[in-house]
Amino acid sequence: MTIKATERPFEIRLTNVGEIRMGSPYNLCSIQLIGRHRIKIPQNGWQDIYAWSEDSKKLVLIKWDFENNDPGFHLFVIDTENGKTLESPRIFGLPKNVSIAGDTVTFIKFLYNKTKEPTDCFYKEKYQFYF
Image 1: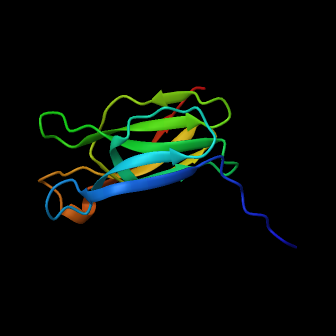
Image 2 (image 1 turned 45 degrees about the vertical axis):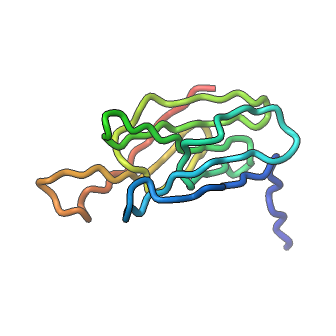
Image 3 (image 1 turned 180 degrees about the vertical axis):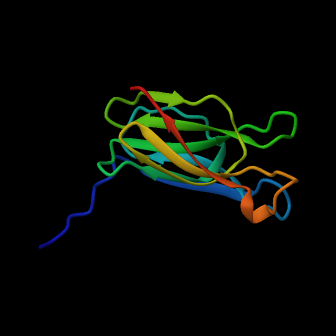
């Protein structure tokens, strides 16, 4: 049995990748969507992680939001079939990874808590989008 790779509707190009703060394991980058599409997104202010849905119909990106120097982000979902985009409210913390299944985005974030060890400051959360 041959498994066919899912064809993506466009390519994601990450450029200008660098640390959000000196010594941080989290990055800031620019994103370009390359290919035939009409989706417009800001080029700058993104994290260098993203996730495609299994059928490549949805793409989730991480958009940084450092309000008053406090780390935060927005989940930014693109419906690749119609170009519609949705953005979550600001979420506190620093995302480590992200996945999407259906309309649900699952992510693990780091949120510092001085009463805990740093290794105990990772939280798994879900966010539901309604397309």
